[in-house]
Structures are given as C-alpha cells and as structure tokens.
Length: 314
Figure (cartoon, one colour):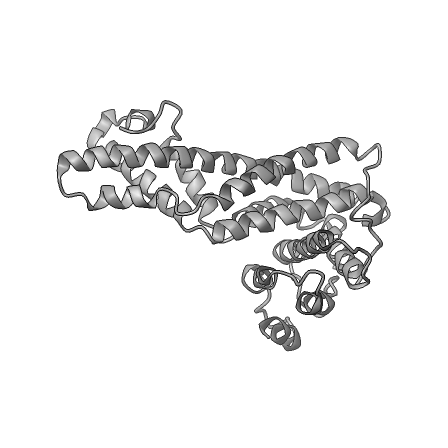
C-alpha cells in the first residue's frame, strides 16, 4: 500500500464551518457529541456506584434480611444498568457516524477540503478518549453490571422453564434491562477502551479503502503540525487537537494492515510522540501517552523501530 509519509494540512480547528454539502453530516455528528457530553458527566459522577449496597446484600447471612437488602441493591443497580444500556446504544450510533465522517473527509482533494468535518473529527476522538479514560477509572461499573447479571441468572435458574423476566425480579422496575441486553452491555464495557474498540470494529469494512484510511494519518499529522507551530493560543483547542491526534493514531493502528508505527507509515509518529512529551500549553495529560502505549495493536511488532518504542517507553 503506497504512503504519503508525513502529510499535514492547515486546518482551522477553532473557526472552521462545514460546507453546504457537509452540513447535514456535520449537524448529525454534532448532535451526537452533544449527547455524548452528557454521558461523560454521568460517568465522571459514577463514583463507587452501588458498591455499598451490593456489599451489604452479599454479606448478610439472615435470609429475610438478605432478600430485603438484595431488593434494595437491585433497585439501585438496575437504574445504573439502564444507563449502561443507553451508553451501549449510543456506541452503535458512534459506530455508524465514524465511517461516514471519515468517508466524507476522503471525498475531497485532501482532509483540508472539509475543514468543518476535520475539526469535528477531533471532537469525536476527544469524546472517545474521554469516555474510555473515565470508564477505565471506574471499576464499579463492571462490578454493578456483574452483580445485576448474577442476580438475574439466579432468578432464571430458580424459575426453571418459567424463569421470570428481568422486571419480575424483586427491586427491578418494569423497564429493566433484560439479561440479553445486559450481556451486550457487559461485552461492550469489558473492553479496556470500549468506544475506541467500537469504532475500530466499525472501520474494518474500510480496511481496504486507502483513501478513507489515509484520512487518519493526515488528520493526526495536521493536529500535530498545528499544535507544534503554535497556531492556537487557547489551551482547550490544543488539548483537543492532541486528543484528536492520539485517537487517529490508535484507530489507524487497528485498521491499517501494517499499523501506525512501521518505518513507511504515513504518520510522522516520531514528531507526534515527541510533541506529547514536550508540549506545554497545556502539558498533555499522561493518559494520552498511555493510550498509545496500551491501546495500540502494532506497537510491539518487530517492524516498529526500536527508537519509537524507546521514545514511548521513556
């Protein structure tokens, strides 16, 4: 596969607006990301979830009190699992939007021909990385979900052929998430980086489309270029560009057959990593380097230069 190594274009990440032809897609993805911001707030506030109530229910030895405490725990957990189902459903919308956005970016002479969509792509990656970072830092999510499925499983086993529905389990409301959907939520959220995993799975259908794939290194290189050249004074713009850069690198590493790190990669990976280590307006959060270290697919390949591995490890 031929490469255009190191290509970067000037993108106005602060003032870009969509063209007429891009406006419908831009509005659709913008609306999604506005919803996404609400989910980030919910994740940030999740804390220990229902851990205390679950602990009380599991440690209670008296059968009557145990049933009462389990019902109370399940009432709290079921509300949280309903929110997880909303996150799962939202991931499916992000799965649909990402290939559409990157395909539209591939439709011009280069990414710079779609300034509004290019800027929006950095917002999408910003959301994906923030969601996954918050989820990784909230183990109570999986604890709540595991408890929910355990109680449903016991109810089903006790009921035999006439196993109760989720809503018939004590403590659960009529709109409770059923066991099958809870299983889908668990599969989604069990990934270390669930939103990134969702979009790279969605992009697999484009793994042979060079034009679509090459929007990712061009976007990453452009983010790197604009930040390194101090095009923006606002710290939030610079951080969004850095998150967009990292998101594009990780996604490209999963969907390109050779990944992001090999010697002939279209990514200027050395410059990108160096920027993450040296930029100071603001200093990039450590999680960005960690995303590259731990969420990449090809970083440990023999084809990755040892100097890049050392640069990331340092």
